[in-house]
Image (cartoon, rainbow, N blue to C red; front, side, top):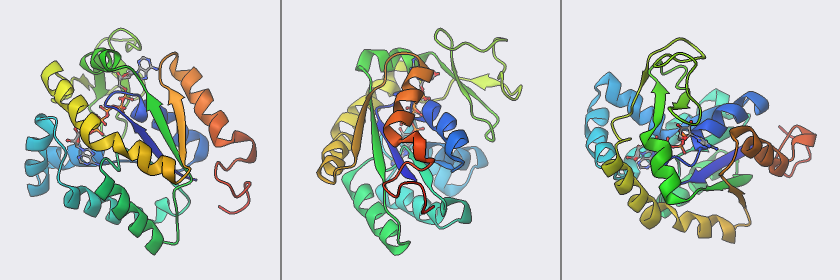
Length: 229
Ligand code: AP5
């Protein structure tokens, strides 16, 4: 199964991706995570990307398209993948179609998670993320607090507030989403791929809805009926 999770900042893409990768045993590919790793490593790409990220703007298309091209070519992506935070512009979606065409692959579903904007601001300003990149589990100080404040339940790593999770940057990210990323709903609707999901309610309820839409029964969520991947 090749899946795109689409939705505004804080819609729950990462939260749901972390649950879905366990069920389907395919990798989560998050451009945000890859860019944050480059920032942390202090690479030239990371230094340039940080300026855009801190301002709530998009990193230039050619940079993220290059990242995705390299990542999809890796062996673990052959059995399927969950794209989280990519594509974010129509040119990125068009580039993805080309990359997948070259790999004789295609997108099976685009799950579009819808959450009201003020709820997104509350979610992001209260989010705490595990510093351990191999874990990266998200918590929320009110909705899903860690058992021990500041410590990840899963791996014991330290929790932190992302640099771009302050209200000013969150509002800029929302404006960027509305202007550049929302048009992708139309782009993929025309291809018959969009599966809309209301992203409010319990995390497990939303997960169950997604799995229901993807067709959990066959063990494969694409149209192959379960036998081809
Ligand atoms: P990225 O890291 O992709 O950020 P984002 O899209 O803004 O998404 P988030 O990770 O903030 O939110 P999410 O939807 O994963 O929500 P989560 O599950 O954590 O990108 C960051 C930056 O990198 C961009 O601004 C841009 O600069 C750059 N970038 C990345 N990709 C790019 C690209 N393709 N092109 C150009 N630039 C790119 O949940 C949020 C919170 O809500 C958590 O606390 C969680 O616990 C809580 N929560 C989740 N579900 C629920 C629920 N049902 N009820 C209550 N709380 C919930």
